[in-house]
Image (cartoon, one colour):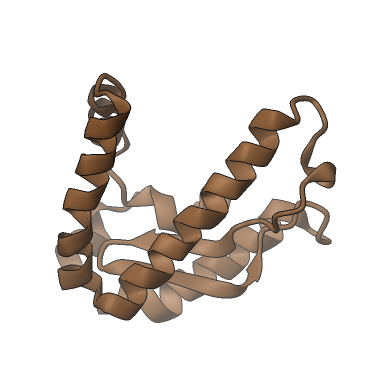
Length: 138
């Protein structure tokens, strides 16, 4: 496994996601909200209510961190009040995390966090994936 890229993002079809995001940016704000609301039922079906709720809570963290960065340009992460996102992320079947938030000042920095993610991926995700999904990763 490539230690410079999180295993939580190697399996994604990045080009397809960029294309979809580009199309979504062309929608008005209200249309984007309706799109998000329309995705929720399929997330609950796929993940269950508790995991979908947990994911939506993560989205709230993303909103707060983005707003802090947007309203305080040039001040950097050290001035932010909202802690970093949980280490880990989306998987083909949902999402998994390490019980730690991202912290660039941690000894070993992002390299250490990627190693933790790789361990979670190998132990908790990869073994539960159908072989065609596991084989899609580089």
